[in-house]
Image (tube, rainbow, N blue to C red; front, side, top):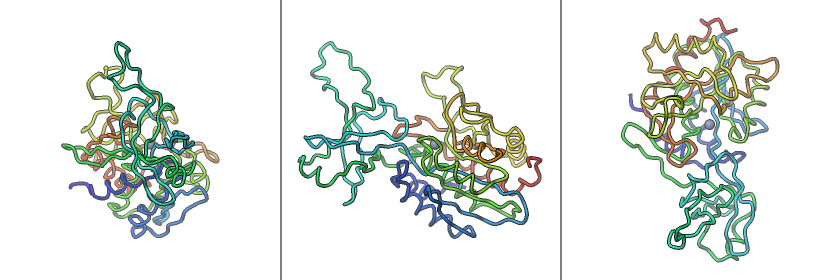
Length: 347
Ligand SMILES: [Zn+2]
């Protein structure tokens, strides 16, 4: 069955850097609202959607709504915007990109560039990769107009269309709108279940799992599952020792990353169900990085936690790329787990 590209595209195109996830939350509410029994949001801005069960475990799913981006740090005397990154950018991935500056009066298009000399002036100098701090936004407007329209703290997002490319989809924000998409589609595809499913679209993951932790504290889940992207190191220049996942080989069952070691019983449950249901999967060990599950695992007296991943190339660039079949495998496997969770000895 083809995945709902239109929904994935709308999720990816909605702007939302950490703490400014409102547009994404409205979309999630529209999509998940009709599928669940209760929707509420908490003080942090997490959107909490509950689908009641029949006495089974309470399972919290977390997918983060925020994308990496910037806040305006100051407007210089010539009308160029200087930026505060929110989330981990690689300076090499930002050069000569377009952005949207989200002001009170609406979004303004801008050009993102760094304090570098044009190639014509370099002579024999070797150009260095610009640092994230050296970037600025040019709005193509007089300084006075910029000063009137743009306020310190306005959100700046990367401007790039979400497109189908071959068997894949490429976007500025698959991290983690594809996780949000997997969460929605898993709930949509859910058949009979006894578990209470609490689907949480979280905030501020990219600045340190700040939304998921308080949500996990309030929800008190029996099991927590984060949905996020992981690195696919299957491109030119990757060595065997860098291997993590590959595109097109299925959803990734995470064993561990830098933020958590997944509960081995949950790893085994997901693997068992994937085998039984013939859902394409691969195993993932990520030596660094983290997901919302790393935060939720350690609230209160601890929560058995796990992350299901979508392998993604070019992470934290405007061309994050994932395979459509892997995305479908992710939500299918999650739905089957939610239906069968009570059969596994995790509690
Ligand atoms: Zn992420």
